[in-house]
Image (cartoon, rainbow, N blue to C red; front, side):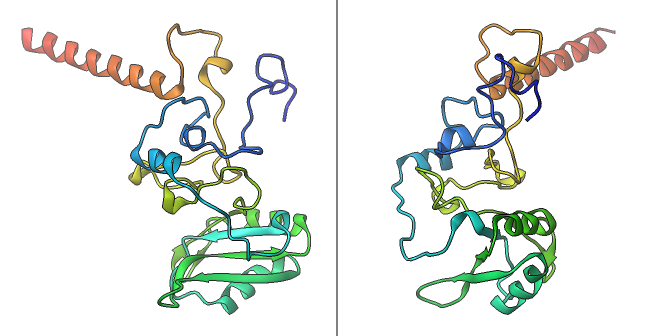
Length: 215
């Protein structure tokens, strides 16, 4: 981080989730929200999840690949990700009942640098005409982790209104109150700030329409 990010005023702010996964925090664009803003977050907060103890390997060397087309095979994945380092293990996750792919996989490399290089080069690349998401593996590294199917996870798409922040792919944004010289009384989060901005804009448009009608 830059020296500005390490100043006394901003030292508690971080772009990323560090050690503990807090559903409300990762559901906030700047990590400052104190209440959940969508029902999926409530589901994540109320759920219990235990990481798969059968998964082996070094989580610091392992990457997560999501949004995979169901046509993608384990051999394809190895071919796409082999140029970035020595692959130790590949796991394409399948449904226990049907045996069909579930759209995500994990690849373990021999070193962390190789894993990070694969993330940087492959995130957003298309495989079988579908853009993939590539990030670090978090399940075994973050206390309190909740997967996407329980309302947690990271990433997401705007159309679902279930964006999750704090990861390398989608980091937190700096809080407005810390980066701005103007302190707004009574605003506890960026979400509240955005609501007030929208309210002012709507009020302004309404006033303009009234003025035009008066003419």
